Image (cartoon, rainbow, N blue to C red; front, side, top):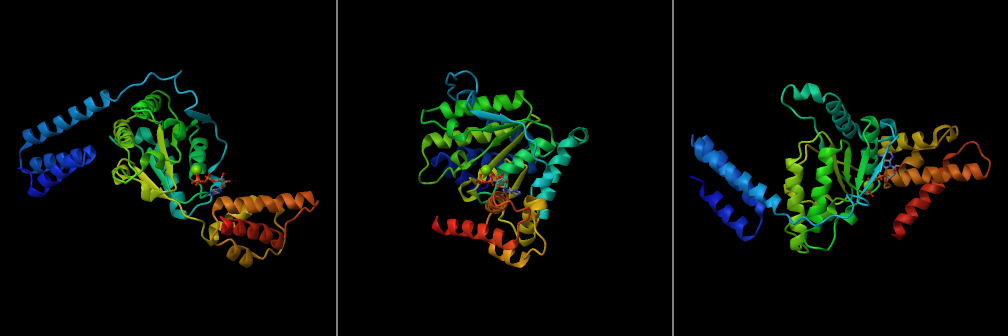
Length: 322
Ligand SMILES: Nc1ncnc2c1ncn2[C@@H]1O[C@H](COP(=O)(O)OP(=O)(O)OP(=O)(O)O)[C@@H](O)[C@H]1O
Ligand SMILES: [Mg+2]
């Protein structure tokens, strides 16, 4: 018999129309029963939930879709190598692990295991989330399909979920990397105040689609607003990578990478690193390229630290104005 707490949670999730929560608790009841030796009951409960989920997906309203997925996806081939991505050692190792598991997927499969392929990237703007998807596409020799979330989400009832289903059908059929960029547009917390019924349905559909996806494609979702993300999402992903603005050693590495042979001798690193303290990778990238442009336009072959400092200051000031 289910515990009192489970029964109360079941009732609560039913009244708040939180189906995912309802299923989760029902599955907990099934596990509880299995542990008690009630294998048949546990099996029946799981069957009931599976059937319920299947019918739910079937009844998602399918809206006739204008000529396949045109406009919804942008496909590109990437030539960005891992070496251009500057991250903390631990994040880098996590990305290397995704690459390694992908390359060794057959070995894993022969032991009944699946390579990590559903990845959530969270962190502030300009820290390399989109770039990571491009690097993975290059390293794994896969096309990168970027889902245009703003086009996916429409105000018409049922249409967004139907489009989402089309995207997941494609994920099944066409092997590649699928990036749901700016994911919080559909991944916002299901119980938040501004929640409208349609968005809740869309998120529920996404949760079901991603859970039932057993393709070989990589599914990456990126957001710079992790607080908005519903907790039910986290457990659907094989890995969640948290991006940060760069630490001192990463800033140095990034600047050296971008300036390359433009870097002048006796570079005043201390000043540069402290001035760039609050900037994102993307802002540092911009500052470096501005300094390179200035050097080229004034026919200089090298950049000295004060020129780069000027560009960094401009970035810092822009940041203050914002
Ligand atoms: N970790 C990084 N290493 C090297 N370059 C970076 C990194 N992060 C950002 N950049 C530079 O900044 C540009 C923009 O970064 P990117 O689009 O990956 O940011 P993002 O994290 O996806 O930001 P947003 O949340 O705004 O989408 C990159 O094309 C690259 O030039
Ligand atoms: Mg991005």
